[in-house]
Image 1 (cartoon, one colour):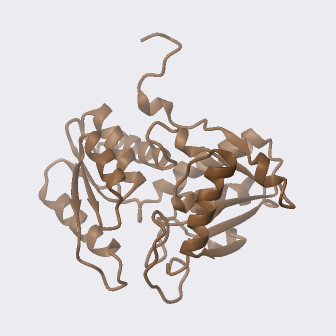
Image 2 (cartoon, one colour):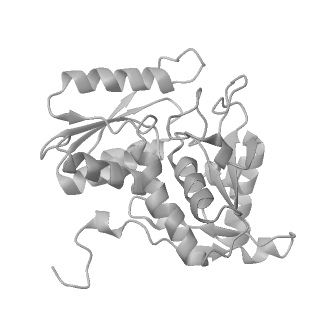
Length: 277
């Protein structure tokens, strides 16, 4: 391998750029900067947690060569795992639900993953619990399998503590007033909030959830924003006192904001990023 090249695609994860929203910032009273996680090899911030969790599983002997990775994910985490599986020689089985986009499923399959669509709803009217149950059942039946289990694996928040948050701190030299993150399985907001309250306690951390999600309690109902929300509080959020503000975004607002970012800044993002904006 040439010394100036990465060992493989996994080593290309992180060091994503910060971009100033030049046009939008002219119209508002604050300065907003976005971190373009889509520049990770798998196209999202989920590459960070996926790589960290798989690396730790390999170190502990929980995932051996030729093994199978089984995960409940309809989106970016499954795509990240599929990418890692392709370069590392693992089979990947992704449990998705009917809300999974055709694009996401096509990407998983392109990397060689097996995609199983779960159509049975759980007691919250979503599919999270039934997907997780099937993933756990498959892991018991398939020899040499490993469950990253992002909803309940605290390694996810550690990945963002040691990578995402630290990177933001270094790139900005700590010259920021606040950080805004979306929440679903909780790894990103859990790790980022922990890091900043440990290192820069004056930085305000805002968590964005979907209107209709029950991550922080309250009644749950159907919503359309993909990539955010759950029917319960995930294990990765172990201290909500380190989150300063909680905000629930409505479907329409998230879709409009995502389109605004594309049309005015040339930055194409998903709806969950629209919710954060």
